[in-house]
Length: 460
Image (cartoon, rainbow, N blue to C red; front, side):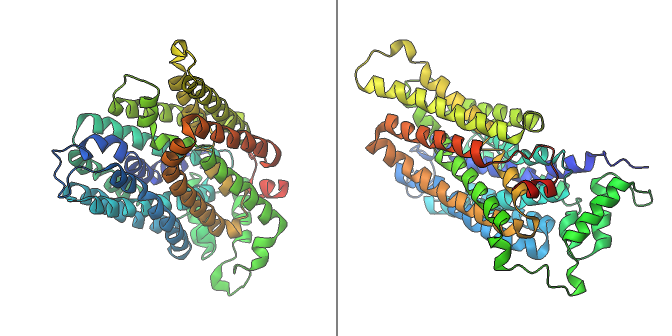
């Protein structure tokens, strides 16, 4: 008899779905890996080397694309299913990598990155829902961290390739990743919860697959209970019932309001901590610190730190708990930003800080490691876990749209804040936000480790 503990197909689904996230991670880090070529006089653009303003728009183009992608693909996932929606998202990613070698001006690059951003919006919106709906309770957060781990791996791949190859060669190589995604992910069935809205029989087949139980094998009581809860919560649409239809009351219920409030706090922690904004300007930060490391090599170092931190969260999320890692993350970011800001402040005031010139790099490393251990990785699966299943798709869509809107603002604001407040003032501001968000997590965010979706909902 197949065992309910057979998790092979769940891991395969989590891995294959996030191959698309690897491609998006490559897109995210592409400008850092390619800026030397983009600003070189020998490039083949009709407009010449990219100015800082043009490079800024090319860099930021993925965020409005991600915002619209989160809205569109979140809606599409409810219409055609999570699986087909993710497969469809591979097409704009393929088009993006195909445009890059033929781009003749910054506008072409901006359009390409906007398209890739839409696929990224799908990753952040649809993959957490898909994983939450198919995973067992004990694996939900581990599989949920695959998204951020894949993004970090993608950035490491693009920065490493960018160190050795021209960006056009890299683009041709990158075409392979979305093709591999389609080839591997195609064989995964739709999530059981989505299928339960349409057919109990199809939902059972999907659940059997993800629990490692073959079609002809008997099932145990645990499987029967899981299937019963699933079909009870998602009444088939074909029965003509109206209870599946969303109403305003579903969103104004106290538990729904609290889940949205906590989710919004986690989105603010993801953005207002300044971690992502600093990541986009890591080369500038290394330069300001007086580092002798080349810009291209510094991006590789940053990517290695990201992978290390994200992998650590994957290992410890089920042991230490989500809340513990989130608290470590925001407090670590706060400490790193405070130390870094103090160094820059004292240096600007004329104090002799030569003995501590290692501090900015060490602090920045701590910020990145702490960020990728928590707020940049665990926030997404937690948001999907705490949101009531009936409104999960809509609420996650809204939260991801908010995140991408904030990301666009924060990335564009960073150079302005650095110039008006100074790098020290900007970092002190981020540290203040991180401290307040640490208090928010300690007070309001529940621990979801090892709990069923029903138990999490009852705890709100």
